[in-house]
Length: 228
Image (cartoon, rainbow, N blue to C red; front, side, top):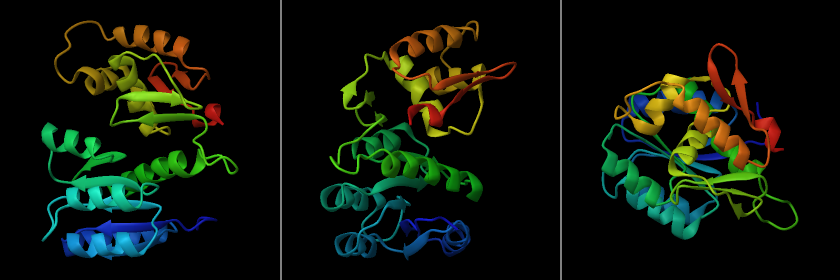
């Protein structure tokens, strides 16, 4: 169990998915409140504080985007993961434009979802100064495609930002160069995978802390401990 039982709002209308994922969240130590309809979720958002919301998009009544808007309006401190079967780029861009912290496509392994939740909460709950209330350390503003360190914007190119974002989202995962190329260029890049080494080299020069580790023979990994 976690020392701090984070409160999670889980919006999902499909009973089996809701029951299975809720059980995993409870076993991981989260306090979970579920909703089957968008209006119910919006009401809960207005009435209660949540550390994290996991939202399906295609639910009866108000959709997940409407709930996301409500969270941004009433509970800006609540982190949000969109969990949906919608794979199209337009839906993903819309979610990030509405300040979602992550976008996870179904079907998803419950363990992977828990890791995504843990990573998001580590960033949002572990990077606030207790006295000033301001964000400390390294923070990614996904809706603006930029990274901040102690509130100062880092001069990253789009490719450097996307590389950092990919590693930052899953700090316990080691990415191969091929996987990083796909995360940055999708299938549009044709050439040597060592282009990633050049991007990593440039990114390291711009990061104020040594948070990108080389895993010999495999690729690269984000070192969360390095950012404090």
